[in-house]
Length: 247
Ligand SMILES: CC(C)(COP(=O)(O)OP(=O)(O)OC[C@H]1O[C@@H](n2cnc3c(N)ncnc32)[C@H](O)[C@@H]1OP(=O)(O)O)[C@@H](O)C(=O)NCCC(=O)NCCS
Image (cartoon, rainbow, N blue to C red; front, side):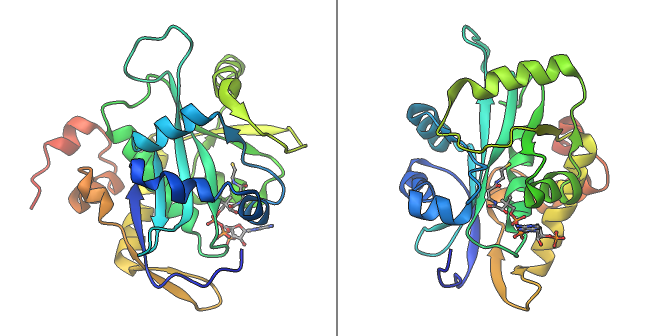
């Protein structure tokens, strides 16, 4: 999408106020431009709104509240489930208007850690389903984020069934896909990725353009810099992280 580069961006976890800006990415003119192959499926309206209101979208937004990069965390439950914690969390709906800035790695790392850190972490997996022909997305989840392919056929069947229950408007034609799982090593990598972006303070394109980046939203949900540093060193139990002295 040929919009002017934003002057600065900040990470935010969604609230009800983000609904219009996030929905705007799904206007056909914008969606078809940033996702021409139709890799990202729409979700049924109530499900979509509820997830945004409950903070299960992470965005990079500019000073006017426009969303430039989005990732969502779909809480998957079977009908009749009464547990407050979902069965699995599907990370997906990754979209960016800023090609070449690796902005999705920031937003997706932040959201995956946030979903694990919150009390509503899944009883099963945090995972993303990626089309095998979707090169930028395979690069994102497998190479940059270090998520590992799910091999267990029973787990694949279960998560597929839950995931597709509320999908609408899915137009992509090549249906060969792989589920990638965010396990312990990927959480360590996510923390290291976020610290690297914090230290740099910018998103940087290989052509030299840069955009100042504010990641203070992580501290506002309790993932402070000392927590991220400990995670990046391999301390990955919540109990150990919560007992850290937070200087
Ligand atoms: C998937 C997506 C969110 C990734 O965002 P991002 O990581 O910020 O994207 P970038 O443009 O910075 O590209 C990341 C990498 O993919 C490469 N890439 C981007 N578009 C590419 C293309 N069409 N073909 C090959 N490589 C491509 C970039 O060169 C970069 O490679 P590098 O890591 O070796 O430098 C973004 O490409 C997008 O919005 N795609 C459309 C929707 C989509 O497919 N969503 C994912 C559904 S699972």
